[in-house]
Amino acid sequence: MKGVSFPVTIAILALASSLASAYDPSPLQDFCVAINNFKSGEINKNGLNITLVNVDNLPGLNTIGISLARINYAPYGLNPPHTHPRGIELLVDIEGTLLAGFVTSDPNKLFTKVLNKGDVFIFPIGLIHFQINIGEIAALAFASFNSQNPRLITIANTVFGSNPPINSDVLIKAFQLEKGVVEYLQKAFAPN
Image 1 (cartoon, one colour):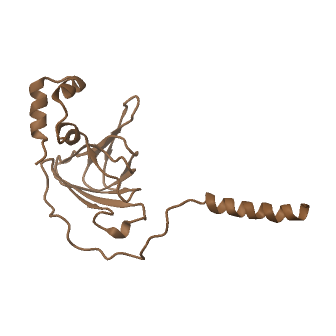
Image 2 (tube, rainbow, N blue to C red):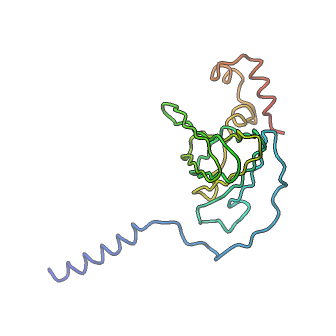
Image 3 (spheres, rainbow, N blue to C red):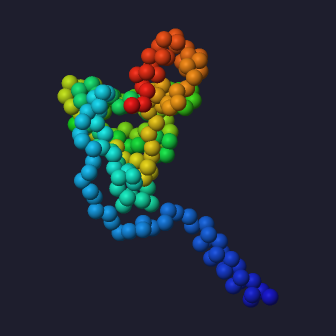
């Protein structure tokens, strides 16, 4: 009986270790040839242009677990408070001077740093964060994410520009604003 238990134990351990080894599956393809159909490089009303490379526009990223963004900032351009619910962001300042920051979830502590060429800043997953070009010249940064699709929730657009709109009484009370201010913000952030 002792001779049988050793092989059975080994078989059970081998089976258990193969079940416990969990990781993303191998990619379905070796590589993906990039296509050149990105949106134009126009700067938006915040003085910002983001060129995103994720699984939506580069299918070769499927199952790899990464995505990238090139962020061009006009002088004093702002990447407004936002969050990525599915990914950590690593930002590298390539040109210019940025002020980057995030707010912790509890007790809502703000962490900021002035970034110069070559500096790196990490935004933890799901936390509200921002960047602003504090220089008089254009700035450039690259962001990488540990998710093939980290998604983006821009706070003001989401709260004041939802479709259908959030009841103004909710926003008046939540943000302690006058009704006219809430109506103005809902109109300013209304979807096009």
